[in-house]
Amino acid sequence: MLKKETQLFRPDTVKILRTLATNKVKLVNRREELRKKYPDEYVAIHENNVVGHDKDFDKLKRDLQQKFGMIDHIAVEFISAQKVQLIL
Image (cartoon, one colour):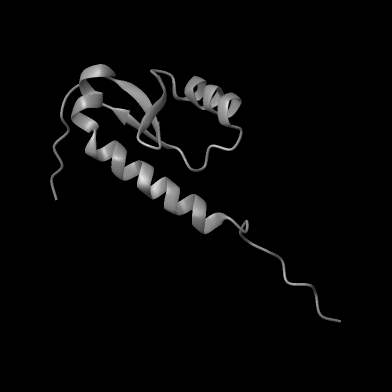
């Protein structure tokens, strides 16, 4: 007997990933502005809007979950007060 194939991904996975990628690009493009407003905080971006920020990641995550339910599509990044130099 063959097992029914298990669905590994939600049907809207591609849409969520595209939205997340768009939100991440917008966050990166606004990093200098965000650094001035939210130094040393986690910042959440959705549709080019700051939808949350906090120094405590877990608190920000809870706040976003209360506000949006599912938060897979929201870009969140720690915005350091100082510019970070990458050595490649």
